[in-house]
Amino acid sequence: MIYLRSDRLFIRPFRESDLEAFSAYRSDPDVAKYQSWEIPYTMEQALVFLADINRFKPGTPGEWYQLAVERQDQPGIIGDVAFRINRDDPRQAEIGFTFDRSFQNQGYATEAVKSLLNFLFTQMNLHRVVAICDVENNPSVRLLERVGMRHEGHFIENIWFKGFWGSEFLYAILGREWG
Image (cartoon, rainbow, N blue to C red; front, side, top):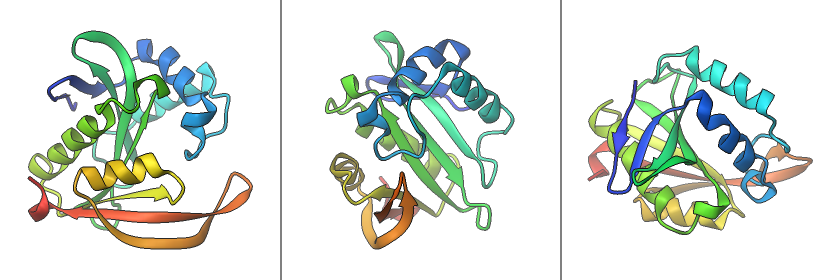
């Protein structure tokens, strides 16, 4: 199991008690706008999510693993971070993150993503980590740049997303560049 601490956060495996808050922030149209799920995100979907992530050992190549993020001084999740080890090259991974709108713009997501990157590079000894985000998702673009990731690609209308062609940015960082 993965348990991480930062200055203000505790990052840990999901529990069933997290699912009500998880379902609520995933049901927020502003939070879901650039994410793969549709709203509302029901408690039934949240239960399936928990069962799915519990089927795999963290770091199973090809499978996303998500961790709940909560503040150390107050219980209750405020968001989550995720990673997927590349199935074809387990020295590389992709990351993602989602935070409740009421906890955005407070540095929590940056702190959580830095903690996740540190874990991936120092504990899992990865060579490279990437992140992909919609070109219109300016807060995510700023976060990825703030944590030191490099803008490496711009894919134009490369994904059919929620009824429209979407464009994405690719960000990456190497293990030797971290820290």
